Length: 418
Image 1: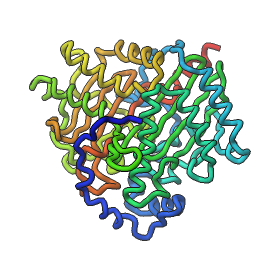
Image 2: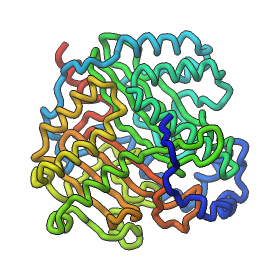
Image 3: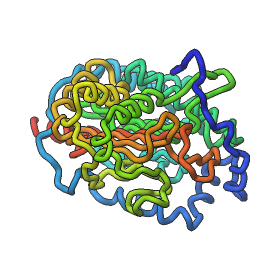
Image 4: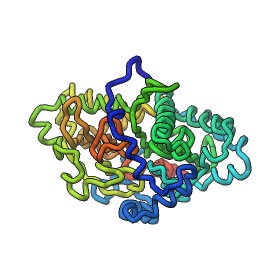
């Protein structure tokens, strides 16, 4: 697990999370299906989630800056992905599943169910695959975790595990263990596990959404959403576990390294409050995120400072920030990925929302033709903070713009090469 010798100062215990009860009057806390159906029937959610449902009806094209896909930024080339180990682990999963579970798990590679991941715990919104906390044996879950372990770096696997136990910690903290727990996630295979043909899998649910695809020895991980509320466990068997500290600290270091002139360009808005941001720039669910779930075809223009204008020290910090997101990849795919990102320095932009003192909540984005990273200090939701951004609730997202989310561009290139 991701641990530290001492727990960083955190304010989530100061939040009035007992007030959460008022949000759940009349909801069944012991049945996630009934809970989700009742919650999503509320009128206030329709303007947020109806567009998400509609978005899947539009064929996938990928995130762009202006609606025009940049061609040729991705290549069909091996990155020494651990495909053999992944195939062996996936076949073991298929062996241990019951016939009913196998029917839920397997899906066609080209059906668009791979786009139906999301962060909220609303089960009807992402009921796609096998729900692990609904009668799935612990032994079967362990085998599925074996596929995750085979596909990610050790650090990436530990990050995912930290997300799962933090979700369990939150469920216990707010008395919603049937809704938020370590196994309240969906798992699904896309295509047939193969060392030569394209296939992949998704693991998604509250605060942990990982999409993994391989073509031969080439691997793509993305979109990848990791979040936490709170981002530290301060009691119990996983005390000392925390999430996303590296992404937080290095991002802040990069921003604090900017000169006043550079900061004027990088900072889009000095305040995080959604009421002070343009309406297009803030969503009650995603808040400052632009590239979250169901945003597969969104146009996201470059904003902020061009990173080619940073000095050598600042650029070193930039690569450190990017690497903190990419460390979910195994070593060789990560090296190739970083080389791919470095090649587009002249078209890489860094932007910021909020102030940048040590204790300030903030948002940042790093974006180029081949990468889009977002970090956001969200408002407290489960742990009530009167809708103000807080340091203990973090969302991160990474995307592969111009068509390579879900490995779709390398899959297309592979098929064209046959």
